[in-house]
Amino acid sequence: MKTYLISLMSADGPPPDDLDVSQVMGDLELVNADIRAAGGWVFAGGLADTASATTLRPGRGREAVLTDGPFVEVKEHLGGISVVKSNDYDQVIGWARRIHAATGLPIEVRPFMGDGDPGMPATE
Amino acid sequence: MSRAPEPDVTSTAIAAVFREEHGRAVSVLIRALGDIELAEDAVQEAFAVAVERWPTDGLPPSPAGWLITTARNRAIDRLRREGSRTQRHTDALLLYAQHDEAPPREEGPVRDDRLRLIFTCCHPALGRPAQVALTLRLLGGLTTAEIARAFLVPEATMAQRVVRAKNKIRDTGIPYRVPHDSDLPERLAAVLAVIYLVFTEGHRATSGDTLVRTDLCAEAIRLARVLAELMPDEPEVTGLLALLLLTDARRATRTDTSGQLVLLADQPRERWDLRLIAEGHALVRESLRRNAPGPYQIQAAINAVHADALTFAETDWRQVVALYDQLLAIAPTDVVRLNRAVAVAEVEGPAVGLSLVDALQLRDAAAWHVARADLLRRLGATSESVAAYDAAIGLTASGPERHFLLARRNALPRVD
Image 1 (spheres, rainbow over the protein chains, first blue to last red):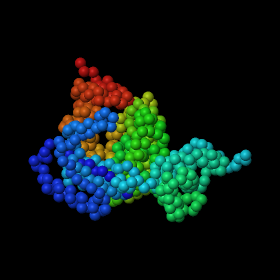
Image 2 (image 1 turned 45 degrees about the vertical axis):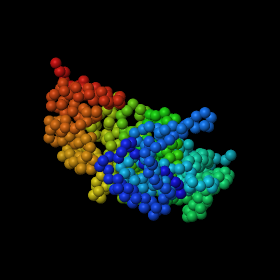
Image 3 (image 1 turned 90 degrees about the vertical axis):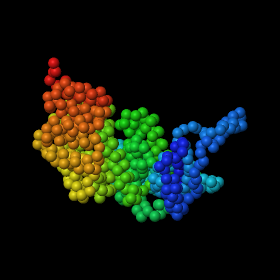
Image 4 (image 1 turned 180 degrees about the vertical axis):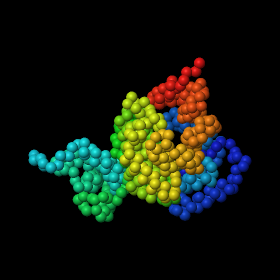
């Protein structure tokens, strides 16, 4: 069993006027229900606006320096994540395809290191 | 040391067997070990043993079975030596070994895992260059150096490409299996595209090492044959094999003795490979009988029409146009429209052809200017033809093609 991070990349600024947010959330919930039913559910959530981010950068020694704002200022940022587990990569890609279809957003799928549950101490 | 009188297996023969059986052996070992790197190493070790033994012992009855058994035994030894860190692999291997019903000493024709391997190598999560490199490496048994040479990239670049692809397969857990039916059309299209790309790369008249590039054509045909053997019910697989054979049948006549390109119209047809044409024809008929036409089958059928004509003038151009119409229905691209327009010019004359060509938005493609140049020449519009050749030459990087276009342009009557 591997665990994967599915990242949803959002554009900066308010959502387009013609976007039916409740439709998107409804479609996403359908995908999430299937992920749960398949035993793949770990966690998912949307992130608040990048303006609310605080970044800690290396300062002197290990003393962090806080800055107001996201790590990088770009036109597209991490808008939400879904963490899923599966022993079938094609199944994960299938979920990601559906998340893309529901949101129209660029999606990144990336495995966590190693096998098993990344939240637990290594067993090997 | 006594030398057996009969065997006499040369190292060339062993290398040929190894190349032939590499895909089969690696694909079985990957399933047994669950790891591409381990499988490759094990097969490499088995090859080293073969080089040592076969010259005196002779070829085993089933070289593939021998290589697989030897590789598996080596892998088991190695995993046992390396201990519990790889317990998982050892367990998998021993479990597999128990369930395997093949005789213990030497396996006969084993279940064919090459299909799994080719779908894994061509998984859409890998980029096309990585798919091509992995397929040639794992199924074709080409070395990284050979692949690098064939694609004119530095060996280090190719090595890195192969390693990154293998790591991605491992880290993401790309499954080692033939895709489910619902995914098959899309996944098969990627496999066919990879094989076709290997062929066209070998077939392209660029200035690379000719010999190596001919190898790429041969390798693509070999891969297409394996795929056709493993998926006999997929008409597009049959279509691709037919397309490659019918194209390859003309290879000897595509360039003249000085390496210059020769147009289809001017190729000495008596030197086309009749054996390949006959096989290609049979495959085209077989695939079309299934009544599920796809782009490879139709392109093969177009090539079959050309192969049928004893002379260029005898070509059944109406049939070619009809086939391009079919192809357009499936693949409505401007490149297909351009090829269709050229065929239409043979039926309805260059003026009609030119009007179709001019309607296409392909000003960045050399082929568009070449088609215009030729049609304009036939219409007697010499200065416009010269301009079109110049535009085509400006867009052509390959040496032989440039030479060819320059010669065509210079053969036009002088404009005063």
